[in-house]
Image (cartoon, one colour):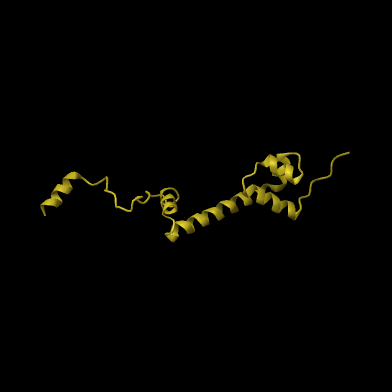
Length: 113
């Protein structure tokens, strides 16, 4: 006789989303939910796994952005600008750095004025 088809419950879906959000491996999630195979887990919970991971990433990114934008966490502001912001990080000592593209000859020309 064959095994009855698996039917996920709302509580199981919520559990899978939360476990995926904290980075648990699919083998571990399957075990906690009571499924033998990660393949079966993916078959029935594919969207929940993806949604849990995406929600966690969005939550952490929002918190990091809020910290960076507040001005209270200069380290986070530098991190945000150098990685996610796509530009160079702020100088760590608060002093403006020289423009590496500026020509020395232009500096001498400016000195004559």
